[in-house]
Length: 451
Image 1 (tube, helix red, strand yellow):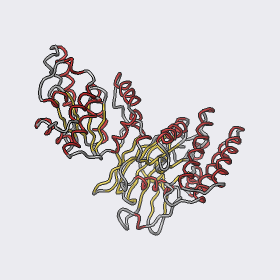
Image 2 (cartoon, helix red, strand yellow; image 1 turned 30 degrees about the vertical axis):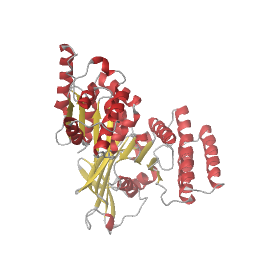
Image 3 (cartoon, one colour; image 1 turned 45 degrees about the vertical axis):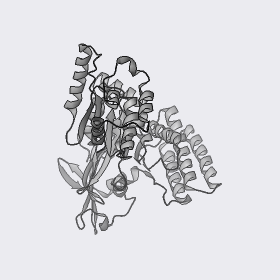
C-alpha cells in the first residue's frame, strides 16, 4: 500500500499543490520554500503531529489533505473492498479545522464519510519513520527512530536474516550509547543503520520495510561527500525493492539527472509553495543513452537544480574561460551554475530538462563557421545551432553565440586549425596575463551571460 499522489490545500506555506510520488522522491529547492511543509502534511495526515489553526495558509478555512494509495496487497484489497475504485486504489480525504477532524473516501466522484475502523486501519497500517535534520535533536530522538525501525522490521518479517539484521542494528546503537552523542555521530549511526538495511534488502531482493515510509530531512548533514554518495546509493537500493523514501536535500550528491522523474522541485512565490515535476519521457532513442552517459561522466551536473540560473556550455574550455572572464570583469555570480554538456549536440537535452523544471538558463555555443571548415561540416553546425535556438523558452532562456568559438573571441581574430591543440591550457594562459584586455564584443557576451 503506497502513496501514489497527494493534494495539499491550505497548510502552512501551501495554498494548494499536487504531488505525484515515486518510491524514492527528492524534494529540492531553496531554504524556506516549503519542503518541510510537504513532509509535515504527510505527518499530519497520519496524526503524527497536532493540527493548529494558525498553521493554515488561510486562517479559518479548513485544511484538506487528499491521498491516493495504490499497490494494495491482497489483505488490503479485502479490507478496502467497499471503498476501492476500479483501479484498485483508495482515495482518502482528511479535513481539519479548529474544532473537528474528518475522513472521507472518494467513490464515483463523491466524497463519503469514512468509517472509524477503516480510518484507524489506514493510520496504523502505515508507519512513518521521520528522521529530522537533528538541528535540535538528542539521544532520545534517534532512540525513538531506532525503536520504530525495529518495530517495522519485526512486524513485517519473521525471517532469520531479519533477526540477524536487528542484532547488528543493536550493535550500532550500542556504539552510539557508549559515546557522547554529537549530532555528527547521530547522523553517522543513522547512515550505518540505513546501510545495513539496504545490504540485506539488496541481497534478499525483499522489501524489509513493508508499508512503512521513511522521511529523511537533509541526509547530507555532517556527512563528507563520499558518504553522501554512498547514502544516496543505499536509499535508492531500498526503494528499488519496494521501500518508500522521501527526502529533502540541498546536496547535488543525491541528484541523478537520468532519474529526473524522482525529482520534485519546490518553489515559493507570492501565491505560496508549489512544486514542479515531470513524469513523462523527455528523451527518445539514442538521446536516453547519451544523456545517461553525460551524467555518469559528470555527476556534478545535478547542481543545476539548485541554481538561480544555469549556463549551458559545450565543453571544458568554455567551462573554464567563461567564469574566469566573469571574475575579471567583476560580474561573476556564485548562485549561477555552469554546466558542461559535452558537445553542442547535447545542449538540447539540457534545455528540455530546464524548460520542464522552469529553471532560468542561457545556452552558450560556438557558431563554428571557421574559415578552415568545409561546407558540409558548416551545414551540420548550422543545423545544430538552429535546433538549439528553436528549443529556447524565451520566458526563462536565451542564447549567446560565439563567433566561431570562444578562442577566436578571446583573440578577436580568426585562428588556423593547428592552433587548437591544448585549448583550455593555452586559453587560460593567455587571459591570465595582467595586460590582457577583454575585447568589447566578448565583454558584452559575458555580461549577457551573467546578467
